[in-house]
Length: 116
Image 1 (spheres, rainbow, N blue to C red):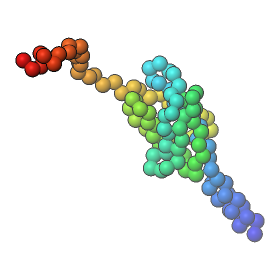
Image 2: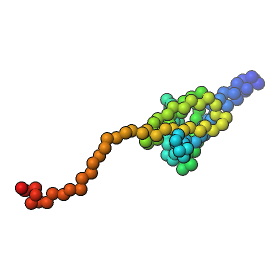
Image 3: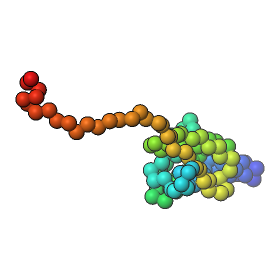
Image 4: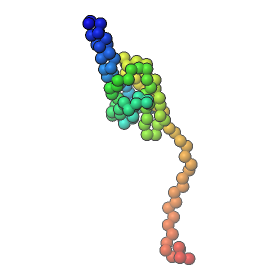
């Protein structure tokens, strides 16, 4: 009977939600990124960063797993998590794309010029 209760207790501890915490920062300026999406790869468990770049969400997935971090204007990053004992700090890089030059003209044609 004691063995059965011990097994049930152990299983309930394993199924309990774990808390994933951390911070998302810009890889170049080290500034916190507000509104970055952090999701466990292959699941719907995740959350968004607050104004200080911190995120916190509960999961039933046990480590090791991979966090997928996305943020507008930055490259998507996959970050492996091996333990939930300490918060993670993830730095992502800006997606710098070189664009072609754009020329803006301020010339206006009058109606008479258009007609001729």
